Image (cartoon, rainbow, N blue to C red):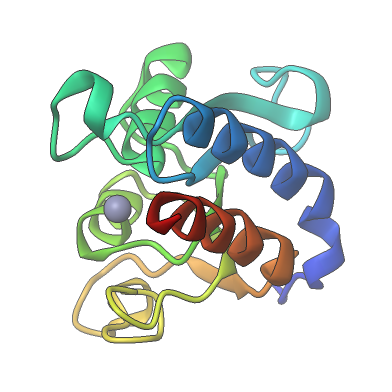
Length: 163
Ligand SMILES: [Zn+2]
């Protein structure tokens, strides 16, 4: 598989952004994720979307309820298989170590993210779990899709909190 140009995933990132904004409206840190099904698989809905989720850590009082984990779980439930081979995880913020690990375990083909997380990112910033050669599954990584918009949602959320 060859590298994917970032604009291939802009429409999916807009859906993830909508999930992020919804999460922010609920008082959650605004991060959103979608899982795209394998092209032409027939398992996904409009736009190839298999599942979408926003961060739900506060409401569910669950430290693992990050958008990526929730979207991966929902996608796997829909497919009826923990293996999400051929799928693409699209998320507004660079995944943390847990979520990057979950993407590897789910065997997704690709992880697409928007904003860089210099404080906790595990897809190139602090760690690079997704491309670690010691792991036997390494998804393709596409970064920087609508990065400014993804970062702005977070910046606005935290500046609103300080005000
Ligand atoms: Zn995470």
